[in-house]
Length: 411
Image 1 (tube, helix red, strand yellow):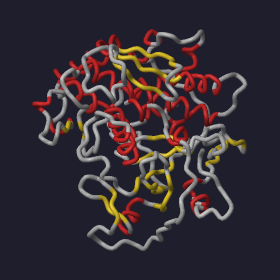
Image 2 (cartoon, one colour):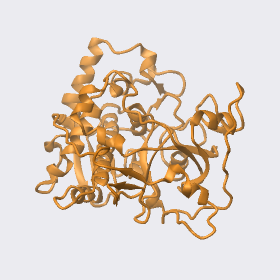
Image 3 (cartoon, one colour):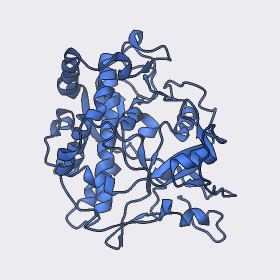
Image 4 (cartoon, one colour):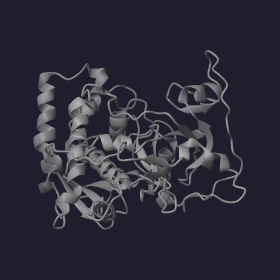
């Protein structure tokens, strides 16, 4: 169950904060648009092995958006790192930490290698399947193994399947049926599936090209090595998800009508501790820089407007955006909140951060590894900001309401 508003609720200030305020859109701020670009061969109709009749119409817009993300400048360093620098002998000495910056950019020979792998080789190593056993979202599984890529100890250079949950497909199908009018839900579902697919393609590429590493490589200052979420960091600055996806908790309206979109769409700073803790509890074999049970107290999340996702489905946006701007897709951070980290996969709000800089300066600080720690950092004094700490414990949401997809369980 998602958190409930109850009498004498110790979290009543939280429920009144702008972080959970219902977002109201109109036709002037959120209008339907459809992409017209070509679909990359990785995501094309022939890559789907069991789409029902008319199924391509359901997933086409998500595949078009996935194609644009896949080919964007923001992911060039990511693909180059996996394709050109996967040899651990060329990696840094910080436990197989990979970063394109360490190698001085991409030359013409390397670019040709990247293009060949992404455009010609990868489509032959990858298929998409609608799957009843996948609960929600998508996950990648290398053929010939019985477990998802987060479990087995190394990639063996085999082909992969990306399993898309039947429930995810059916929700998208319903949201775009002729009688449906919920543009908020449709926009989110299309965006979410697109990101799911690109996330899992990263794992499929690693499966197909790297049969030597025991762990997925580290990127930057990541606590764990999880390349799908590292890809999302390259695109958006951190993973975007809907927390508390319970039918009784809806946070969006369009033209006065409440949307069916379930959950509160937020962006967590990556790597976020809740995922690190959850993966450790489930005995993942991914690499860890330190004991994930060395838990930091809080995770910082930002409320994300649904209008961010709508712009991605506009041809005009892709024609106008600076493709060389590595932060072109990053959402603005205007309203943040911190959530207590525990070992139950609950998201419990504990204090508010209207703005990251004064919040960290007054009550928390970020250390050299990017970890949020309690206490004021050394430096110039900042304006006072009231910290609102709530006592008690919020009603615990069920696990299905806290996870965005089985990427958290399988990537």
